[in-house]
Amino acid sequence: MRIENSVALVTGANRGLGKAFVDVLLQQGVKKVYATARRPETVAAHDERIVPLRLDVTSLEDIEAVVAQCADVALLINNAGIHNRGVGILMPEAVSSAREEFETLVFAPLVLSQALVPALAANGGGAIINVLSALSWLSLPGTETYSAAKAAAWSLTNGLRQALRGQGTQVLGLHVGYMDTEMTRGLDVPKTSPLEVAQITLQALQQGEIEVLADQVSAQLKQGLSAGAYLQRG
Ligand SMILES: NC(=O)c1ccc[n+]([C@@H]2O[C@H](COP(=O)([O-])OP(=O)(O)OC[C@H]3O[C@@H](n4cnc5c(N)ncnc54)[C@H](OP(=O)(O)O)[C@@H]3O)[C@@H](O)[C@H]2O)c1
Image (tube, rainbow, N blue to C red; front, side):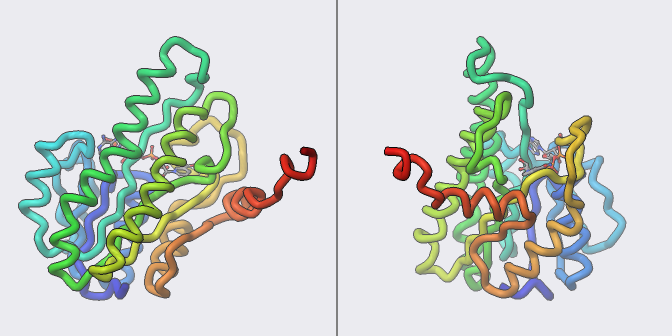
């Protein structure tokens, strides 16, 4: 997909990776970007091509209102996310925490993608970027429910890609390890800059790719999926 002169919609565009996507889209000549957020007043509208819109991705009402205003969208970036870090899988609150994460990370992008499929088709097919994670392939103590949600979102991304092939919509999954955003505040680990991740991803999109492994961690984990350790022992 070509970004220049296209119209994009980014969820969770007020900070972190979502804001980085908006900035890189502007650099690459986007015509307009709907920078959506739960609190649109927190979106930095430093360029006239930025259109802040209210969108809590878990609200059907908000989704309907946004879809009605964004018939010209050709690129949807499902970025908004939460991570209830530290809620271990055996804690009593794990189930409610998992439901909350699945609502935001799995059902919301599915509902929003479905709702925007006609607009994408009407605008030449366009593209969807789903922000996934290296944790789509790894569960750590305290990340189990987030990892499960990202694994489900990865699978939905693959399903969506097949379902939308006929209308020419490119569906790209982005996997990345730690990024330097609010989500990883307090974690003392090497982190990639969200701006760099947005740049790598949008470049890959323009080259027709369907998956981005934006750092070493995600590349190594994906490779590890075919290591066959269980078969070797068994
Ligand atoms: N940081 C990492 O290391 C990392 C690694 C892999 C993948 N990811 C993924 O990258 C994406 C962006 O995360 P980030 O690192 O930029 O984290 P972040 O700085 O915490 O930003 C999260 C964004 O999602 C928004 N959001 C959360 N719930 C929402 C909802 N119901 N409706 C609309 N917006 C909502 C937040 O809005 P508010 O300001 O209103 O809270 C914020 O804009 C997420 O999908 C995350 O899972 C992050």
